[in-house]
Length: 296
Length: 113
Image (cartoon, rainbow over all chains, first blue to last red; front, side, top):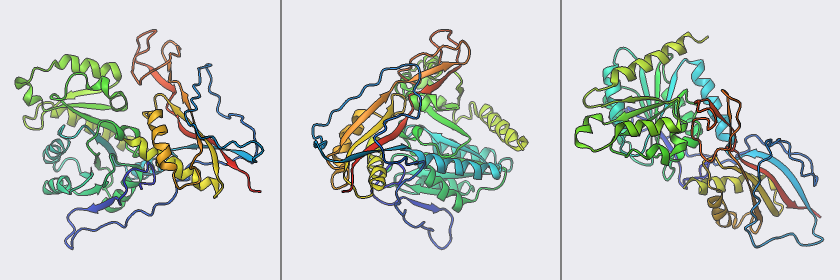
């Protein structure tokens, strides 16, 4: 069971591509308990709530369970835990963030539904920016090493994380991948998350920015249907614009819906095949890298 | 769905902290903007708690309303979803200030005799 969110019964594997002596399999997870940000208060029946939930909103206290073990006369004590369920992931994400900042590496968390064009766009970016921007990649998939092999074929270093049954990448997995990958100082690291518009948005990896790829074939309503993904994004790449002549999509409505969910979103229509919009995307990358370099 | 994994993690955290004592009740805070569906956690809890110190425990979920703060006009509207513009002044400067919680608030355990 993955220690942070519990998904995935099998082990998560992390392997570096391009190892001449075969794949370097990481050791299986040791499934330790999450203890994250716990702070145990004493043994008391004091139900004081240390976090002030202001604004007088309405708590719903549903008690749906029918089997209640409060036997009269039985001794019981209430222990405040105040434990963030995702506390351990958060702590590991911050550790990754610090590690990356120390090396001046710009890390992007690339997310989309399956098939929106993440890997194809990455292949194009690596080829176009060869000699200008050093890029390394962490690939996340449930199974196979196909994507990492495609990246390796472009000449960029890549590590493949296979989550087994897991539906998203987590900070611990990125930490292990970074140890194997060792991205160069001042380089760009792209983390290609598992194709999924729901879960990856909820797990901080330690990235500097989130880039969502959303293809023009996916329908104008998607941003409204997946508000968590779109509201957590910094950049939205509208991919496969070369297909527009064959589609009946209302691009303006697609963009308006995305901005309704996240007014600060930077939206760039792109095509990995025709090259449309890529200059704008590369301009953004260069600006971000320059800002990082200038930051003490 | 990721609530299954989250629920397993909740059971793991509380099991560890209960130090073998029977858990009678677990109280969670789940914000309405957390991306977690409280009913799904409730659904998974019975299954996930079997064979653990939480088996048979009452699961109490306190759902915390989503609230934003507009940095432009100071309004603090209720937010049912993480959508972006202030409903009062329409500026895109709304910050979420409540509703993203996913926390184990407390547990009630049987005391050692």
